[in-house]
Image 1 (cartoon, rainbow, N blue to C red):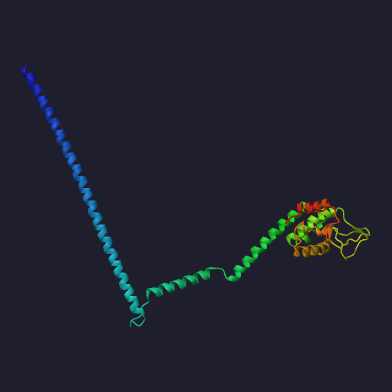
Image 2 (image 1 turned 180 degrees about the horizontal axis):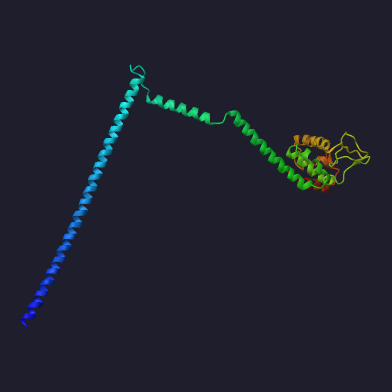
Length: 263
């Protein structure tokens, strides 16, 4: 029985010794890790210190080389020190002059700018003409007055607008217009002038272009005299006074002309 307890006691002591050995090995391992980490941090600190020191030294050396080069350059260019030093204000002035010269060389010449502006204005005018042409074609397309569109485009917008509107009221854009000896007169506005009169007193024009030129000129004169609205342009129907005309027909003329004015 005593032998049995002695065996158990030996085993217990061996286990105890093994436990303490493992504990010591762990402590040693932990201490090694701590010392290794401390060593790494120390080495990194030394490296950073020396890198900063080396960079500062290199920069100081570079600045010294630049100063030496500047001194050598000035001695080569002006060995007797006769050239006055350039002041900072003069340097700034020279730099400003150089910048202005560069800008002038980069900028387009004034003539080219003018040509570009003229070209843009012409393009804008062409676009406006095309728009007016489409508007007129939408109204008078398929009517006899369609042949007059190119000639009307040469007039200002208000004049051509009155030509279209009055022609609609007076002749339905040429459907009902005077003739002379079987010839078409291109008079779609009920215009009575001195040129080649028909038996009923209306002018008989030789071509669409002549009709637009003469009637358009008359409308331009009226616009210049401030007869520039349908209410005032009613003198085309009444003459100097509408007193002898039916007020309803006068108002109808004004309303119809306003409805068909395209500017």
